[in-house]
Length: 273
Image (cartoon, rainbow, N blue to C red; front, side):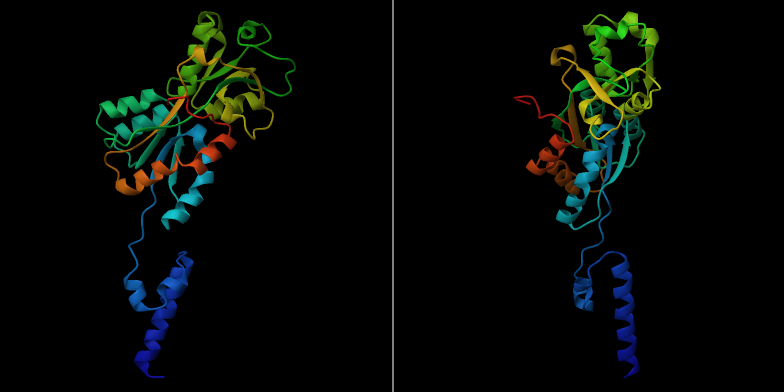
């Protein structure tokens, strides 16, 4: 075999191995011409999302990757208020998904959202949970009972905590229960504290109970007792990939995504929402 032919063969073989390890189908790199026509490798979208969205976003990530023929999004999951502050401080983010309007409103006022990209995504319900070992039903007014000593609730950075405090105001329990409240940094932390028995009760979203052992819903907050629970999404103004970010955000409102949200315990948007 001529030396030039052998070198070309080695080059193509090595390239094919490298691209195979990178997850690129060999069919796309069978010839140098085909290789030259490949688009540049896309960077993963950076999605900062409320921690209560964790499971459903991870479930939907692979389908987005297949449709876009690119990498799956990378998620930064935390309390919406913490994510808001990170974006305000310049953190690299393409899409922000918030569990409340307060955080999204603040970013919009600061001019940090891509104009026209904000949208409502889904709703949820606020529920009172106890460990499964605790017998009997517990209503919101029953939280005054001496046997309930510690109640977990999200802190001021956590929208679920805001809704929980609104429920306490609705039942005129704020002052009475203040000494019992244990503020935590995320709604998932609240769920974990209740499930472990570290506290006697807690305020979480209905979706946070799905698939969690040792957690039982004992009361659902009336819709009139708090502001509507709405999740919002928007593309960040300084996104590196605004077109891909818009496509991702639109996909979260697709029928398939809505079905995934429903399976995960979320609620449809209110009528007219």
